[in-house]
Image 1: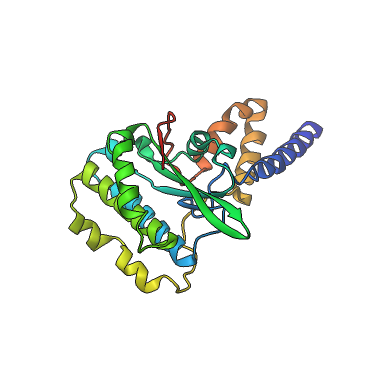
Image 2 (image 1 turned 60 degrees about the horizontal axis):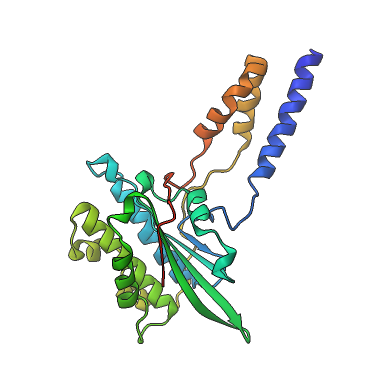
Length: 257
């Protein structure tokens, strides 16, 4: 009985430790919405909603595609106030696991503050292993020039325009879907211009967190299996986890603009 009690205490302590481990550096972990990580606090609520909606729609619709190897593209946006040398964009991409089947572009947008004003300093596009054929650096450069750096658009509008056309390009390259289809099924810049200064509630996406029933299952498994159960814990946590990342990897293929 004492042995089981000690084991139970150990389990409870371990569970609290695991809960604490979930609160790791916010810079290397996805936001609640996953697709938009606004560390520079520059996005309007409408911008966040549009980016989340289009990125999540791209991922969800791809899951029904007949070729399973082409399922799961994810477009993630990440803003940061500070030097681009502060961040290892490849490590963050891989920590997020952007894109199922390695189909993940991730936009890192850097700002600096001068006299209490924010100025954009760089955009780094980190591209997943399998997405490189779809989005080579030359094409990304063209898209940024054509749809982000436009004189008549300011930042919020530019990022919505750029991400929309990135998605249109991905859909065309991977699934042979034309611009008209994207226009019909996604929120575009014209839509955004009507809603830009409206308030939008946060876009709802599912995120994993350790809950009481997870802990109860862990306790039960360890009580039943004893010490040997510790070998099963990694697999058990893997089965609980429903992180939004598809497990994609980047080998450091990126483009700075």
